[in-house]
Amino acid sequence: MRCPFCAHDDSQVKDSRPTEDNTAIRRRRQCEGCGARFTTFERVQLRDVIVVKAGQDGEAVRREPFERAKIEQSVALACRKRGIEQERIDQLVSGIQRQVETAGDNEIPSARIGEMVMDGLRHLDSVAYIRFASVYRDFSEAKDFEEFASTVRDVGAS
Image (cartoon, rainbow, N blue to C red; front, top):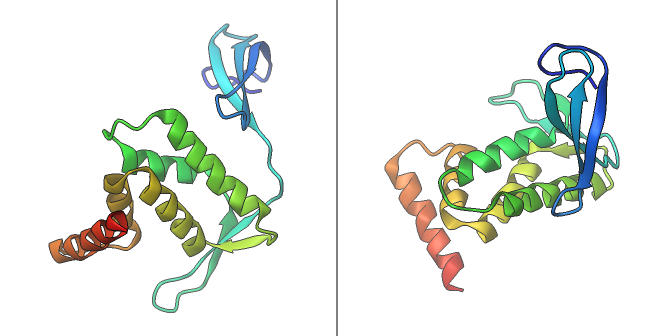
């Protein structure tokens, strides 16, 4: 494993343990070049999945490899300052990754992943759900928030 500090190619594993949700192995490493310590995570990848991104206004469709980190970043941003435990966020992201990888298709539309994230956030935290939706659905005016928030209230009431 390459050191993130000095780019030396060799490091030594000092400690390994499973994460709280048992979906990854956390490894504590020490660089043999500079002696710095860093953490890596090893996860099972069931298959290589390609995300199909639809172009806007008739643009060409783009394809790119599925990246868990993009979902982690989006969910973390939506949940920022909400007091949600990191373990619950990790479980949500792992669940979405598992759904994507076990769907049976080698390609998945980005819109489907967005809907999975929205569904997960809806059950996790209503404010994070609205935050994510505001970006995902491209809210441009205050009335967009108002209309969407009224549907969130309706979901919570049922």
